[in-house]
Image (tube, rainbow, N blue to C red; front, side, top):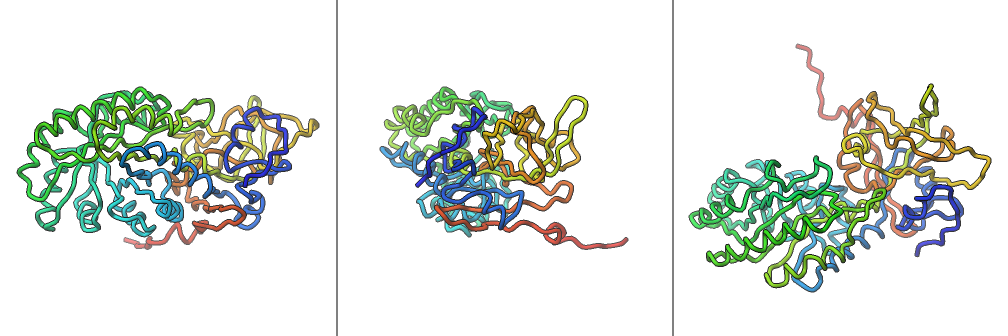
Length: 437
């Protein structure tokens, strides 16, 4: 049970960012029933902290949005691939969408049934495809004619049936950041309806290969339903065409991409998403696959970091923390906004408010978590929480500047477990050898 929020805060966004499993009690930030400072005392910083309660709540909301029709909710592993999170979702009945052999390995290790795995991605290698077919992966979303020919070859060699869905690129603008738009004709993803039509007819000549679905994924962090509706209508029309041509189309894969709120966005709820698409989907009598990632784990995680120093030059006040763009690259890569709040709130009017850039340790000017942020003047040793960090945080981490990756912690009610140990310097050089030529 979530505890009553008893602190008033001078930050007007405070209440929104604590309307999840993360909440303040007596001025202290909690995740579920655990004070953040207790986790930090044991684990240190920087540390990613996830709420099991929030992940499951998000998953069930998404799953229930399509409960009136046959469906499978396949969590997008790329958003956060931690084994414990995957196992948690497996226990809840989720499938997964993968984009690499490494993600397949993780999914199987976490207990995801192969028949609940879909495989997407423009650059699947022959070895990855062999591993997927040998594992019994439920469906492969194919993205080119050359990939299709390779799959035909592998299917013959393995003497195994394979079920495919051509990924349609509907040339529809998802109206999101250009780096995560994936459904325009200039993007590398998928194929046109005309190309898919030709491929499907050619598939009749390939023994053991069955076209039984169609798929799409037009973008990420989408806050408008109109592009999704339009793209789904394109797929529905193509399904009807394929059926008239004699194909037994059983599955429609809508991809993922539903956005969440980071700052001032108004994102559709899973219920609104489902309600908008059901009128198109129900007449098709297909099993529907959806691939949410960010919508499942985004608001279920925070990155906690410690203030190292503060400094001021002629025009700027800086708060320097012990995390960096190597831990969360989204602000640097996408200019993405993440709210940053002190773990210990104060309403003490004697503490001055400052406008500061919150920056990391890496030798790049792009290494920042927030610019011109108002917060009570921090002191070295204070803890700050970067909110909505559960998706594309750790999964996009790097070792730039030879920085070890952060620890990860999963909280359930009043208990927490380290689900990824903090890396050591020895971990950084594992697999390397010194050879003097």
